[in-house]
Length: 154
Image (tube, rainbow, N blue to C red; front, side):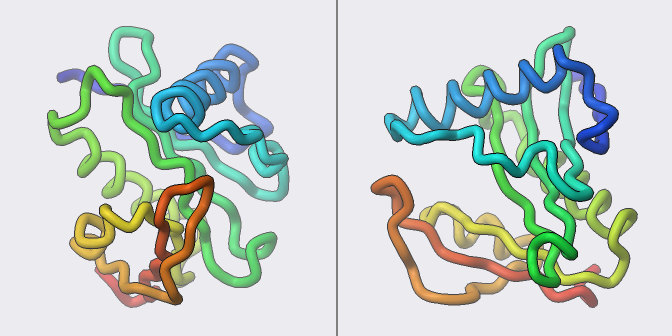
């Protein structure tokens, strides 16, 4: 599967790219997961936010948002991890996490990384050095758990 990876600062996103990012996130997080909430949370165009995108045949197939540690209280925050339904199960999630961790280290070297994982994905993120950081909680009716990866993970 030939994938083109792009990681852009929010100020460098084209309007078409931003539109596709918001469309994909809404399709999966609001429609597919049946969670009616305001998915556009005001963080996409703030601070030093970066957007990691995977494109296949001019279609956005995977995405993750990287929030800078200064705006997030000290940790890089990985969020909005999403893969289109039609390419799930093909190993793209692994590539997405590897690229996200590479981008976080490149942009904010030596800084811990935090993410809020859907509880059933706890073991998946554990493969990348993330450990549980806090208690399970409900977000939009879905069990989540905070997870943190220390800076010295490699």
